Length: 300
Image (tube, rainbow, N blue to C red; front, top):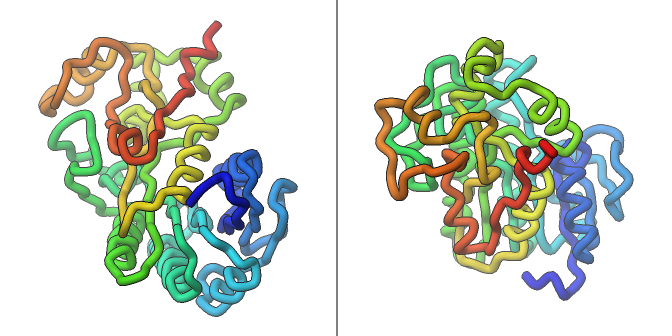
């Protein structure tokens, strides 16, 4: 898809943090946008809004047809498993994605970008330590999901792969990303806090951040990647990792690996700075995307 020609992009879950960021990014690049969300509208960026239960296939078809979308960014699913039974979380991840993809193909929508998660790796909310074959991880690293949230994210990726194999199907992207940070969150959580490894190890969130490889991504960078995905014209389905260029720890990455993942093989060049443990080469090569925002730039 070309950004020089005005098109309509439907964004499911546009009320959320990532949804609002994606809507702003699309608006800044000349797209007409429509927010498809279940609740009342909580943003003022989109050109249109349709209250839509994404677990209802008929409502999804109806809303996408009514807004005459050329592309869809699908974010409208459970952001975490907190507070919902496992089967509800799994259903939200999987069935909303199926409905969006099925409707998109039948309505002739050209491109769909879907929010997966770093959890698809088998990280994030799982109570067990993440299982790693090598670092940095990339799209070829084995996926090992076990908890309902992670299983749902992996199943939605498989669903996207299947739809991508269909004749005349849309271009489909699934994006794996860690915790999303905006400027305010970075200032409070990173810049104004002790980011030493010892302090993080003593924090209640240590298991989660270790499982997600001390990774994060700035909202602006992630929103730009979603835009590039809906503009892409490759055939079928592709998964992309998204991550900031560095870790959340005030410790060189080589030392971090020695401390936290001493038995994991390091592939490629040795770390010589604060590099991320997530390899985003594929997004750079296929989409021209590179993360630009680092919390370390806020320190001054």
